[in-house]
Length: 265
Ligand code: IPD
Ligand code: CA
Ligand code: CA
Image (cartoon, rainbow, N blue to C red; front, side, top):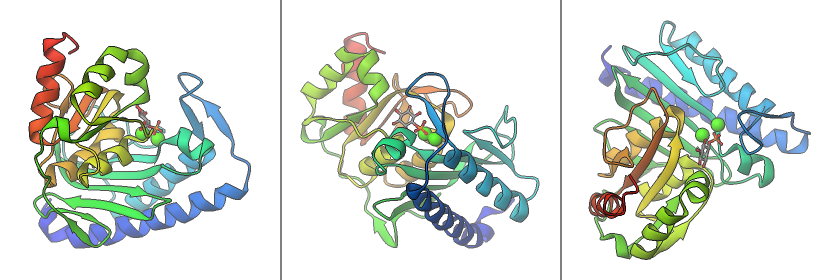
């Protein structure tokens, strides 16, 4: 597959699908949602998460038959390796925010080829901000090129952490909170990563992100010079859950050495 020849066509289609999906999500605000519990009472799925995933799968199968799809809600393929082209989809990232706040949720789509991120999209639906990147071409927020990150020390930036990390590892949150300008919690890995990409945050740490929480953000983050790894500095494994850290290079180093000094990773 020569992605270079297909970037523009794929980019146009993916953006169309994302904007259509967002319209469908917004219409659901006036209708009662069907909400089900997955692994625990804070791990929820709605009929909208399922409908949006199906919408993407239908389109991908129509335009790119034969390409495999890893989707959070399980309507795609049983992906056990990253050979060839694999689409990675999180139909609604921040489902709890979607249900409880009707804001701070995102649609995320990524394409990987033989394990390498080629295209990534995070759409902050209620802010109408589409973060996108194609490998080697920089990252954009809507039509505006996002500058490469300002590599400031940790003490000069705000850090977001996931709610799961906060409840499992208060000590870790405290360490990072003291060493930075402060800690923030938003509740959408996609939107938190987008804030790191745009320089509003210096880093984002999470206890246990699934491949679909990471895939799109990693492509976009790396295009602006951010470092995206496991919390102990190892490479992300996109077939498993990862304790993860995305941050500007200096802050990334500082967080990892702080956590290892305190035996937190
Ligand atoms: C969740 C959100 C949340 C993160 C969780 C994710 P979902 O995604 O991104 O911020 O802390 O680990 O699972 O379930 O709303 O798509
Ligand atoms: Ca998610
Ligand atoms: Ca989701």
